[in-house]
Image: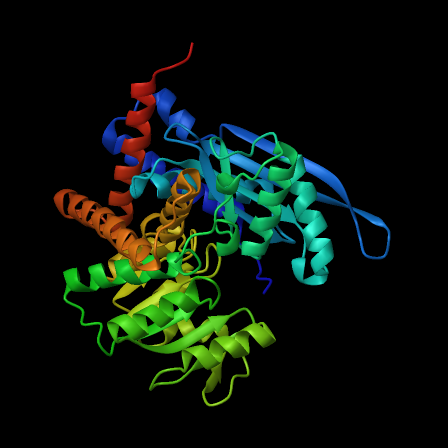
Length: 421
């Protein structure tokens, strides 16, 4: 489903403000702050793709590395008509801090192609993907840059990238991407890992603030590859009741809980939850004021605006999307006593299991789904405890604590490595 994009300048500014606050608290050296606020490298490519009608069409794409001090560049690849360089920069920065806060050895990257994948045939998407992979081949590699699925990309697209890279090498290179199909070196549990991580941290937070999740009402904005598994796990494992779901096409509400699997089947067929039978149909805007205990923005950036924040009455906001809450809205939620689990922690489950997939590919030794899920929960809990402990110690928000930890780790790694030559 194509979603309308947010203002990338707003997201970039919010991230840089969070980093600046953390840097000031930590007394980070000025040269390090400047490094953190700039990307290491940016590749812009334009390339022709032969369309089904026999005519070539020029596409434009980006791959950005924000920081690789702590390990290879890691980050998703999105296909969207409004992809632009500033958005990709901001999302690459988020990846650096997301990897750092869960303490896995990756740096931050992001990539994208300006296109509407729903207007392309499957063969056109394959040719587009393979040509883009060739254009950014100078960056790709298991030791240098490891893409993953993101908005409007899939395991199949990762398989095409892996195959293109491998064909150029002359042998199979499984760990060059993550989020692949199982048959070509993917990991058990990867598909639902971001949503599972969202559910995990929701559980930890609810326990800490004394919120009983059994019967708790959950509302989601977004019902895709993150929103759906988060909703299902919260329902099945924690006893929550999902009462409202919105996407770009509209929203649905049912006080006694929505039927998640039939609704997902409907959404996949119709590309929206709007029109699903047996529930109340409301405007997308209305979901922000629905009474609930847990609200999960799982769509795009800058969706929780000041006006929407003023209308919200939940106990917890769990940021399953990247940068869903503007800084002004975040301040309003804090004033209202709503606990916000920040994106760099809440949505880190995907990159954690991507790390597992990368390790499995390097070792050619693959884990069971139970082992993957258990290791994911351990890392999410350890990371949450560190962030929550820092927040209590310093009397600050979870977001401020998460950035303190992440920025501190990147800065310390930079100092330890030194400056070459």
